[in-house]
Image (tube, rainbow, N blue to C red):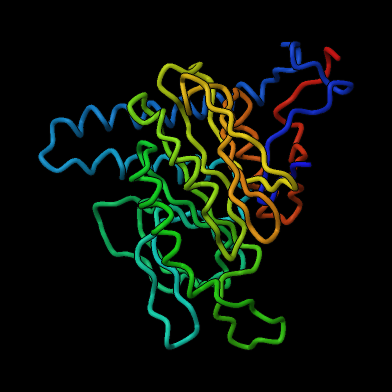
Length: 309
């Protein structure tokens, strides 16, 4: 038996909806595809500009800002989205380094500090958010590779002091990230040059965190259907399962790592591509923030239309 340990993406059962049908594609589903295309368009434009610059950093900044803008439009107003820093009430802990995307409870959280920069819009300013009010941290990278994946996991691992314990309800001065905080990674593309690097799957399989982790998510793959998004997930199996690795590697529709034995079973990682993955990512993230997420179940049917069933 294989079961998800962080999350997995599954279609509804066949008696509910036929995967071969196109009738379910709803207006909401189409709007998520449009939002995804807008993210990629901003990224591509920034890549063109970056080629004209001596120091190539512009496209990364644009990618992060585009993700924050999209989340700001999609998420309920309760959740604020910013780049910036996280501060614990523990005086022995320093303020964290800068993170690309911080989602926080803006109805409850005071903003401890806001960057002063007249050249930036309000949305582009960095902020310092109290650790106990942070709900999610997303590390954004341009292209997925063994190197950038390691950079992203190393960055999230900087949060380990803030995840070393759990805040008790009786704590007058909570100092840790919420036990329900989410860590995630989002990459804008996967290129053919990196598609056959099986170590990418193994790095995802072996990544462990003291908080819930989601993904990584890859917005597009070179040569893959232009509407497809890739989503990684970690699985646990009672028995060892052989890897599934096609000629196209990570750019095939599905890839499965080899198993790694642990005290709780055999750990694996899978990558699946699909045109509903971006909308599923959005609603999974919202369910995680709201505390209603269930691994193995669709978090919302708003991206589906059952009128043709």
